Image 1 (cartoon, rainbow, N blue to C red):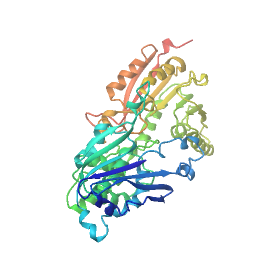
Image 2: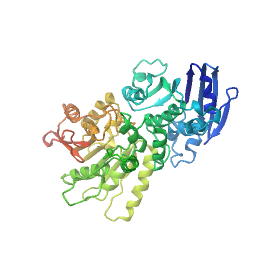
Image 3: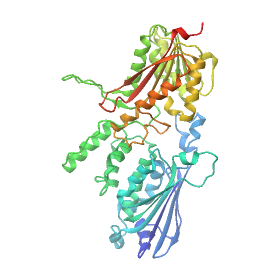
Image 4: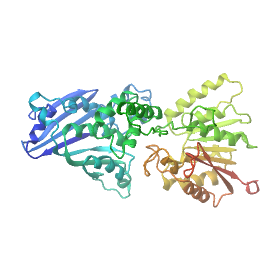
Length: 480
């Protein structure tokens, strides 16, 4: 992970004073467990090139994590990509430049725009190239995006989220570095620390002079603060300070594995109801369907994660067994801890945790009353999904199959970019007509009927945030 800062033109050498780093010495320090080095690869009065590089300890990244026993925690890109981690590592070495406080003889150069070229990477981003360009172009930069050198016999390179970004333009060193340290985490969209009101100060300091008028300001704030209540607090406090009324974000998207989206339930006049998480509404909707089924004794919760839905179903009447199928060992452990707590309830059954995947057929799961795929299919590559669904409807043959997935149309209500996905691991998100078309394709040669519904608050023209398909196996064509 690195940033290269290059300046050309008269007095380019003054940058060394703004950075407070001697061009003839290599800066080599340990910052927050990472080795940070800064070296001048070129230095003359008319051309300067500085490389800032950070090398974290891959073991330290997870050593104190509660997930550290799970080997998958060691298989990630955090050691290599330019992210919020990287920005944290290098911030201390750039303090003089970020604060604009060099030695008194050089303060006049703080506001001097240099001809700069800034390159950084690799950065992993779920944003399309057009949005990446839209983040930097309004700041006066020309933007070049590359995906590195690699030869594949398939289109992996073109589909990769990993890119190298080069920015060219006239800018002060202070503004350039502040913009990078604020926008790189926006690109990566992964925070390694707890997000709190402390982020407000960073938004104001690093965004001073350019963020308020940026055309993608809402996107920047949403991906920096992430949570609805923080976004609202920031907008309200910002309005109070500036004396202007600004739009307050009403919804945002949680890019976490546990799907923390929130929606407001419809309210009748004079009847204030509490905010309910969208994930909870999904569970309620699925259980409402199951309660009305004449046969619901045997249930398979595919992609059960930490067992939240399975645990809720465990206390429903009429259910005799629940198979909680999940490929992640870490999620399975969390699920078992949750299931163990059900033992105190005499009316609950204990779900059976099971290691499994949609890509491997398991005879034990065949012919169950209900099979559930709650927010699962969007994590499967589209070109593999048809095969998965064919296995379900022709081999597993559940009496009822319930599938939920995001409604892409509703992303506009969340003020997301058209090509932006709600979660970094989503391979696709479909609108309502696309989902209906796929559902009909999956059962062309299988004896199922479909009912489509929505989950969450409905907005005219955009539908509801989650869409649900209920596949019911026709009685007359069941096997004897």
